[in-house]
Length: 244
Image (cartoon, rainbow, N blue to C red; front, side, top):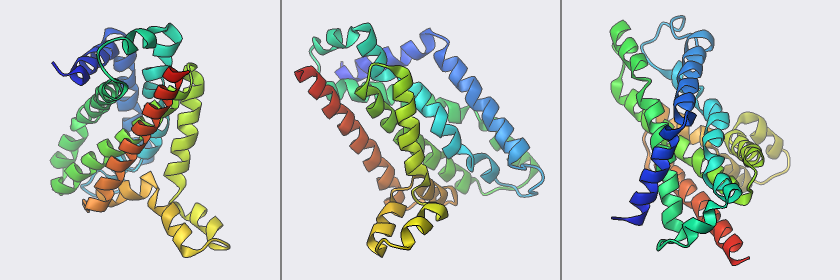
């Protein structure tokens, strides 16, 4: 059996062996409903789509994903189980991928459990379900990028609270990097190449493109490369701590 698969099953099972996953999913569903109906104007908009639902996902993930990611490595280091894991016949990257895919699947379950919203919008109107499916895909990819950042921050410290705060700050920077406010700050002095680079790093901008049904290779690759880059950074961090 693949070592990554073994770690995946261990981590995924640990989420549901305690109330962590249940509470996380419940909070996600409640907040999604509150933002969609109370702040997103689901009925007031009078349109058969789920934009009022997906528009709040970057801000939900900003706090919820670091909360689920902060335990991935910090807990192992705090409890001393990381030394035990490293003595097993598997490498750090296999452990890293197992932890990532387990948490990413939990996030995917959160999205799947919002299907009543999809049923509601189809009952009330005639939405473009292709766009809705694209938005779900984009949301899951964006959640993966948030998660990879959180895992990297968790690898930096054994304190889960510190890992959470670091992840929120870093994710917040990547969410806002393409916003008009940030772009205007750089327009007065930075060259266009720098501005374009900053805008291209925005989690929000790439998600908005996909949420409109425009699934471009550029946006998908951005999230995949972001995930790989942050997981690689976490891997290097763990390897350095092993060496010390």
